[in-house]
Amino acid sequence: MPRLRHLLTLTLGAALLQLPSVQAEELPEAIKKIEAKGAKIVGQFDAPDGLRGYAAQYQNRGMALYLTPDGKHVLLGNLYDAEGNDLSIAPLQKLVYAPMAKEIWGKMEASSWIADGNKDAPRVVYMFSDPNCPYCNMFWEQARPWVKAGKVQLRHIMVGIIREDSPGKSAALLAAKDPQKALQDHEGAGKASSLKALKEVPPAIQAKLAANMQLMEELELSATPAIFYMDEKGELQQQQGAPSPEKLVKILGAK
Image 1 (tube, rainbow, N blue to C red):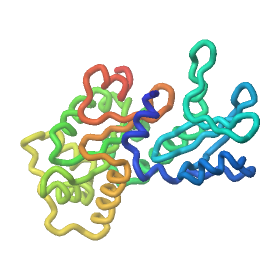
Image 2: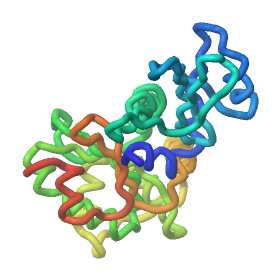
Image 3: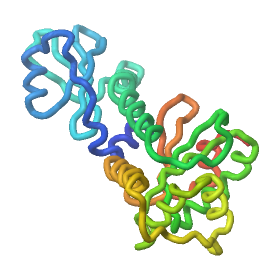
């Protein structure tokens, strides 16, 4: 299974249930029967030997449907050519997974994040971050050469899940006069951080934090850091936890 398909199947949850159905033409009756079972038909694609291909989404998974020439039967699954090439991957990527990825990236872009690095950096990486998360701090440290060189901007989507005071600490960072400096001071100090949780969180800050938490739940994420980035093909990928040195280059690019 391609990495993007694996990512979206396992982690993106309810947020991916909003793809539009195919409405341009009336669906064949056999395809309608599949749709009635809960599949969302999102596009049609060319298939060999008189077959008609349909891309569908079912329970957060993309699947390829092939209508036989008589219009009475539907084959479900991957279709391979004589050389063993999977003919289903490209249509599903284009019609199902790419729109899913675009939607998720847009939601993260619209969330309440704190920038770490140059706004004009050629690469953007999002991470769900908890102020009490040691692995978030580890990734922050790992990323310093890229951030300081202006090659990457990290965008910390602040949440509070690890300790009782995590929401208050995230709120303190979001409410700071200079959130970027507050985050820099906190992460730079590591275990010696003096960041204090807000005892009274302003409604506007509470709303931002709640929206971040809701997005994390929609993506079915349960731990921090949850890191999202675009790979060399422009496809959305995810890393859970502080990455290995080899994976770090894939996330942040060459130094």
